[in-house]
Image (cartoon, rainbow, N blue to C red; front, top):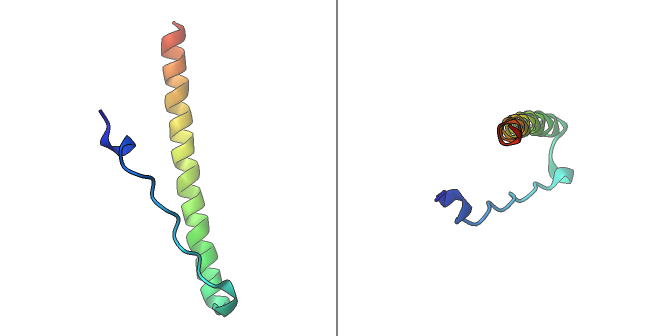
Length: 60
């Protein structure tokens, strides 16, 4: 059994108050979020490929 399924999901982090951040800090925040989005898209792609492989296996 996979223990990851038993642990509660990670809670989202508190969002910083964007109004108090400098323009430079906001730019850095955008870069961090874009990096995270790219990583999430990669994970989604990997999961879709795994699902496609499993679907192909079970259709045979």
